[in-house]
Image (cartoon, rainbow, N blue to C red):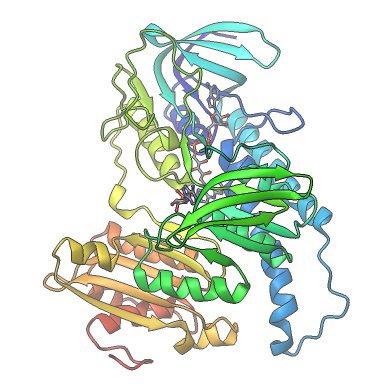
Length: 475
Ligand code: FAD
Ligand code: AMP
C-alpha cells in the first residue's frame, strides 16, 4: 500500500468520513484514519454521532416514545393494549444493531469510493507527515498533500463529580444502561441532557434535571422554550433551574449531589447520574511538534471561514473547530473542504444551520430568535400558527406546539423560523431552504402545501406574518 496520499483525513465521524468520500469523488487519493473503539474493543467508523450520539440516542428516543404513547395515548384512538411492557434488553439490542449497520455502511462506502480506511490513531507532524499507529501498536509514517483534521469532541467533565463509568456517567454511558434507574439525576438541561432525561423518564425513572442557568433552552425562541417546559413538566421531568452542581458524594446507597441555587445549598439523591454539561473539542495526541496548527483559548483548532488552519494545506472541520457542535455542520464543512482542496467552489452558510431537539414535542429552529433580533434593534413582524388548528396534527392526536416565522418588517425577508410540535425536525427543512434562498414570508405564503399535512402549519404561519392566516384567528 502506498504511504503517500493527496488527502489524509484524521477522524472518521460525520466531519471526517464525508470529507474522505467527497475527496475520492473528486479524483484524489485518500486515507481516513479513525481511532474509535467500542466498549468491547471493536473499531468502528462513524465517530460520536453514529456510535455514541445522534443515532443511538434517536433509536432509544423512538422506542421509548412508542412505549409512552402506547401507555398514555393509544386509548384515545380506541386502542386497548393489554400486557404492555418495556423490554430494555431488546430495546438496547435494536439500538446496537442500528449502530452496527450504520458504521459498517461507512466501510462499504469507503470501499466503493476508493478511500483507504486506517483504524488507529493519527498524529500530524511537521510538513504534513502523519504518524499512524494501528490498534496493534504498529506504526507507519504517511505523507499527504493536504490533511483534514476532524477529531471531534469529548464530554466536558464536571469538577467534583468525577465519572466512574457506573453510577456517574457521560452521555455514552447513559445510552448503555442495562436497567432503568429508579432515581436518575441529569446535570445540564442542554439538548443532550433533555433527550437522555426524556428516554429514561419515559421508561419510569424518577428524573431530576439540574441546570445552572436560570433559563431553560436559552438558544431557542422564548415562546418555544416556555411551551417545551410545560411538556417536560407533564412528562414528569423535574427540571430545577438556577441549580449549580458543585459536588457528588458516592455511597453504598447511590450518589448524593450537592448543588446551590438562589435559596442556598441543597442535595439530591440518585442511583445514576448523567453529566451532560456540554462537550469540548478533542485534540489529545493529535498534533506533533512544529505543525504550525494553533488552538484557540477554548481548545478549538483555529480556522478561518474556509476551515483552513494556521498551517498551509492543513484543514479542520466539525466539533474540533468553532461553531455549533452538530453532525450536519461537521458534514457540510467536511464536504466543503474536500471540494476546496480539489479547486472547486464550496461554501457553508453558517446563518442557516438548523438546530433540533428530539424530545416530544420536537423543537427545531433556523436563523435567529425574536429575542436576539429585538436585542439587535431589528424591526420585525411575526406570525404563529398552532398545531391545534392543523387538521393533520389533530388527526395524529399531536396538537401541541406551533410554528412561528419572524420576518423583517420592511423587506419581509425571513430571519428566523421556530417550530415546536410533531416532526418539527422534518418541518424545519423547508424553512432552511427558504432562508438559503433569502425567501420572504410572501414567498412561503405563495407556495402550495399539500393538504392535510403538518407543513401547512408553516404555510399558515407565513400567512399570519401579514395577518392573513385562514385557519386561525390573526391576533
Ligand atoms: P466525532 O463524531 O466526535 O468524530 C471524531 C472521530 O475522530 C472519532 O471517531 C474519534 O475517535 C476520532 N479521532 C479523534 N482523534 C483522533 C486521532 N488522533 N486519530 C484518529 N482518530 C481520531 N448532533 C446532531 O447534529 N444531531 C443530533 O441529534 C445529535 N445528537 C447527539 C447525541 C449525543 C448523546 C451526543 C454526545 C452528540 C450528539 N450530537 C448530535 C453531536 C454530534 O454527535 C457531533 O456534533 C458530531 O459527531 C461531530 O462530528 P465530528 O466528525 O466533528 O466528530
Ligand atoms: P449543552 O452545552 O447544550 O450541552 O448544555 C449543557 C448545559 O449544562 C448548559 O445549559 C449549562 O448551563 C449546564 N451546566 C454546566 N455546568 C453545570 C453545573 N455545574 N450544574 C448544572 N448545570 C450545568
